[in-house]
Length: 267
Image 1 (tube, helix red, strand yellow):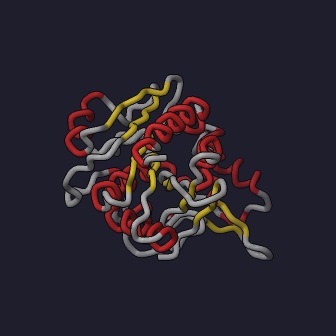
Image 2 (tube, one colour):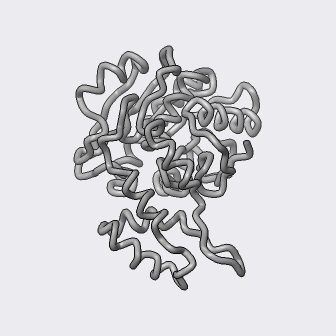
Image 3 (cartoon, one colour):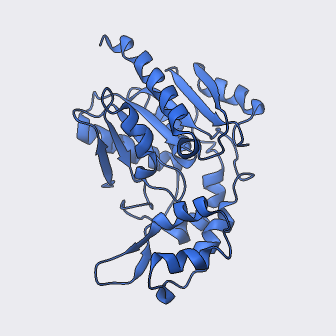
């Protein structure tokens, strides 16, 4: 699968960034730019999102394998990168580390646990709200925002969701995300695949939002069982989208983690 990427910084990429459900690679651009001078990155649009291809199935193993194959095609079979993933992208990043440990020099997980997350923000409601919009009725993006506001009151969430609304030159509006597939796959997206086993013994930074309920103390034993070197850090005054709400704090934690990896590489 030919995944869409955006490069941040010059030189060989050292970090791969994986966004969450209904997101795009550019959602992580702010923190990627903070560390790009020493650690250039690739922002990925994951399958069925952004400008990457659609397919007929959802699976964390297949998404992890697609990103791993793309990185090896770009960087060579012996490449190693740090993988940063938020929410759905965090689960994909975990799956990459477990399935392709030789590729992953370090792992950063943003506000998600290797567990069921269906208790969270309510993506079924959000996808339903998007699918319920009559795109043919809109002249402008503001029209779509006004219509979506009837179902989604939070302005920031609407702005995030409407990044998926795209107008082709000379054409009408359409969704970049494969909403039908993602709606069907929500139980899989919210879950953690039982078929992905083993451990990843590399360094892991786990960042959670202090106001988010996606990562709790009850999750720590499972995290440690899969990722023995995991270190959990709480970002204050941040919810699930901690990289958007507290980018300076997340960027600082990321920079310190990446700096800690460089001595291991002899650089």
